[in-house]
Image 1 (cartoon, one colour):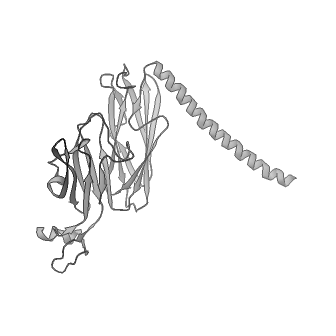
Image 2: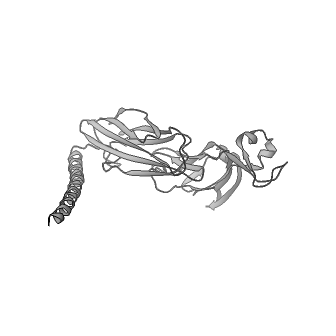
Image 3: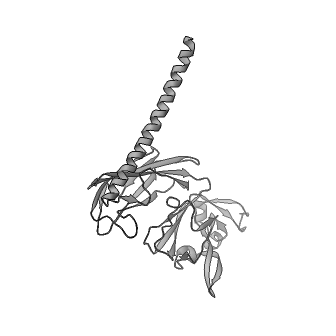
Length: 302
């Protein structure tokens, strides 16, 4: 009988702790809901395009872990397109991140002015050393309003190191006439596409050797071949973009008897980055990927 009591007591404690944790979490949820309702009656709106009361978690896949990763975070003081906060909101920023990266915010505090109802800051994540495929890092950011009312919103960003050697992201924000499609290539070699000298098709050439080749020989090698496909009724390619000027192929589509580019293919050098600019048809949209949107408005193939 005593033995059964020894078994039952830990079970009771475990169940009690479980209910306690659920109660705390639920209590926090109820408090946030009540507080948010109260703040709404005061026309106090402290919101963000990425941070929220319930701390959303964003997964960034195929991070190159070679160069820094920058996240633009917008803060605003509007309820909708018609109703905005009538007074300034002062706020403070804090963050924590994993030990394998160094993190930095572009500011530690700021003010969302009633005249603009908008403010923003950059969060930058830089690898401390060499991260391997399958590794991950995180950054958690909190924004807390300090006056005239208090409210805390936050988010966690998890970066997973990719396997392909290629990563991409879209930087955008509401009101911007264009977006930037950022590509990073961490591959440190080239493959021979067309035989020359002693090199055969498929041979690997390291970066140092590649730099000694003639322009004609370089044209017979590729580190990565990228194809971007897009809908020109949503985004239009900047024809002055270096990626377009060095394209190896493009496709066209006809809309209302006019032809528009809807895909380009181009080479990207080893251990390098490329920025391709696209103009937005609807500037009220935010096509940021992978943080704001789970899928990219532009299809990436390599």
